[in-house]
Image 1: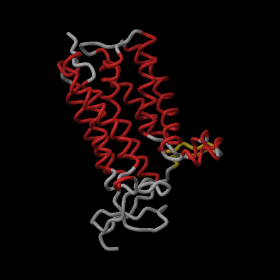
Image 2: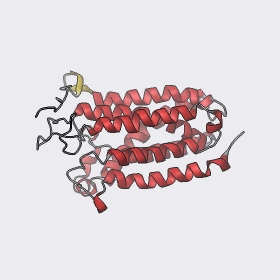
Image 3: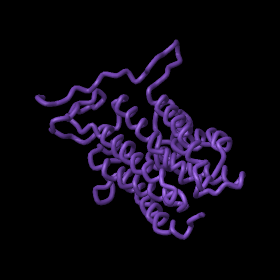
Length: 267
């Protein structure tokens, strides 16, 4: 056991009053949405502008609905369809856990399309700004996964391995939640924010959205190399994981958007 780091015993529940509890995971969602909204208000009006600050404010509700509905439906359909087909009411029990980033992303895309169509806003330009702020929520969400002691890594005997309390095997493992927080959150946000600060990049409609899709797909695929697959799924074709397979269409769509963004440049 020498060299194994102790798992920090952080209570997943920040505060509870009677039957009501405030969890770090819920706070991560809220903080990510609020921080992204505040930055989005600045990016939306930066030249070339794509929306007003009031329109960004109006989109906040659409963001919440898109993430929650898409994330939950994605988990139900991508990860455990047979279970929820046999127990359909459990699909509504969001408090029991089970959210999918890829489903949440689809929900966000649908929210962007419907919102922008109804208000005559350029969808790709608006999507570029949303994509820029998305890694903030990803970082906080992965940190919450770590606090919850869930979605742990594969067995490992390296110097910063951890034993997670909920692991039935009690094996030293990669703290893969932190790897993913760094890759999908910090690194991806640094790249997106640096590029989004340049007017010529913002002018190429779809470039930032494409970079986010391709960047997330790459970061997720790398992170999955250290993460233990879900017990009810295990490894899939060619030793891949569900997260890697779902990232392939994202990678293809992202690369296409980047490659064709020069044709959609605005003055």
